[in-house]
Length: 447
Image (tube, rainbow, N blue to C red):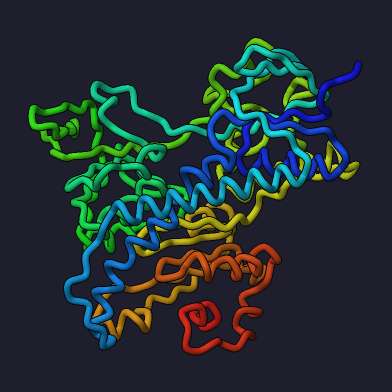
């Protein structure tokens, strides 16, 4: 049977774009459908604009610290609209580059919604249908919204980048990286922030000693963190403000509620049920090691599979899929020792096993720590301390985990993650001469 395309990709995010481009380079006839904007969550409403807001917010502390370094900064003011619009302009620029990249790769971009109509059939929003030998689902994930009265008064990370003005007060609901990052951003920009979570912990996948230090520093910076906050309802008051119930008989008055309680695979109304694509209880598409669903011609990569919700992982999955199906080079992804970061204030980063995980898995665990104050903070008279942890398998001397909190943690960890991935030993770190003066030298000085 002759098909219109060798590959039809639904979703032009990080995974879909990479898969389309690589498949085309292998000689496949490829089209990608996108109902919103090319670039996906990371570029349009996630990692990229978020990190730019982090940079913008941090100038508040930089300006305050500058006085101790001899700079006169009196009278400095902040204009949200300038930062918001400049970030939006950068997103526009990047979207254009993504589209240009696909065009250069001879991938056809169809700017409308597409759904699966059969094992080899795709239906577009205009009612037309196209056939493809292979279909790749790369629609990503979508913010969760709680099923509570008044949930319609809240916003998610999709809308937060487009606020007309900054609120005076904000309640952020969540315990993950998005919640902690926007708590730091808003707090530095002068918003009175209350960070609430139903549970008794933040950032459960991170080393909890590092997380506890982040919670302590966040509170010192003025963020009101409340655990075991059930949030059974939100009420709109006559003056337009919101009242967020805690479930314990009290409530928090605020001007904005941001839901950051997780993300769910975006599979609703894609036609997957009708075709018989297997999904789990959360709506994630179930795939094998080669990204294939139970329908041989249909594949999925990225957050829509809910394996590891990270942009670099989606990119690797998309690339491996294209090499496997069109490049005669079957490849799978190694999900071990993936470095991650939370761009809170201060940022935290980690790779490998946490101390809790290591003690549950290994018979002999050695933990090395360095608790110090960054040189810049010393002169700035800022008492905020950094903490680096190294988790070592005592039986082999291999470094199985690194976890950091402090300035530039993500930048430092990326290089150090190579050592963990390569299985280097504590002795290898000890044998490396320190680069002085730097924060990163603490990694080779732990005793």
